[in-house]
Length: 489
Image (cartoon, rainbow, N blue to C red):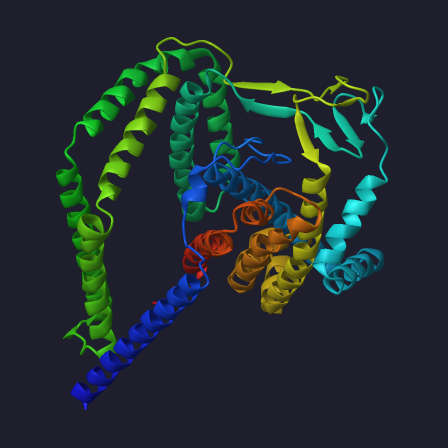
């Protein structure tokens, strides 16, 4: 029976792979019959387009234009995830408030936002922003600090300056020391029951190191020659050595995974009997290492050279940032200003300017996702046994302190998995930016394939990008989900 089971699985695998190859061949034949050539040359050709905003509004190549779109998508997604989490948590807790007004307001918000399509909400905010006042030299509500207009929202901006990297070394040292002190104080609190103020002490240590770093950060310029030397050493490594090291790392990773897998199956009586699935996992781990070696030596032999050059450029960049006794402020800031270079006044390039397209998209996805997160938070809090709240009250904890110290930490085990799904939805929903003309990946890609006709290639890039973002978020959420699970003895 075991032999038949394995043979059937191998046959099914062969049939699936053969089917995929057949469909791929048929698709290639159909494209050739219609004289549709699959080519990626458009990525290295100047697209001749100007983007509305981003790190490069006049990209020199199609690849650069798509990269600008990716960065814009990541910007909206990162800010949206943070704001939606904070807002959703507040509204979810407010939904459970005993105050009638707070309870009904949060309920009304959730019911309205969840039942209106996201695209409609994005368009609504775009229309609302267009009703704001025009830009003038007396624009408010706080002139030259916080200004709101039809062109967007202008805020002060803080950015790294010349001494930032040297100063960050001091801050990281302070963070390490603060972490050690935090764990020591937490251990002392658990052993003695006394309040040790672990978090405030750790944050204070980091603040002290950051303040001292403002004075001594030029001393860490000695790291510049070290980074440069590391880059030179990496550049001198033969490609074959890197290929061998990568192969050895893949084999070691597979072996380590197999060892840990077998250790988890080990009992006091010895290694438990392996099932067919266990054997398949072990074989798959070894096969993955083998395919990695094939990738390094056969499929993509240039991977090693790219890795060497990238690491070399990275360490040389660090070497340029760390200059001996380089002075200058680690952080600098600038306020937004209004200038008039043509017929109409407008925001200058100083400060942080949130364009109307960015703002409409951000407001839409944040409020929409926050409504769903609020319900998830409410359900997670209600999933915590009522006895936990009663026990916290018996210990003299206030309702807010009991919520922070007792209820929410336990509710996170229930909240995190569905919240991860909402994070994925938020990232994918940013593709609706095309409705308001925001230069995200989808909007830039559509402009490119309208010019070049490379629809399949652009769509493939879309799919790969959103797949990578989804997998990255899933990995992060699963990491914290594993950390929060209950460990049974």
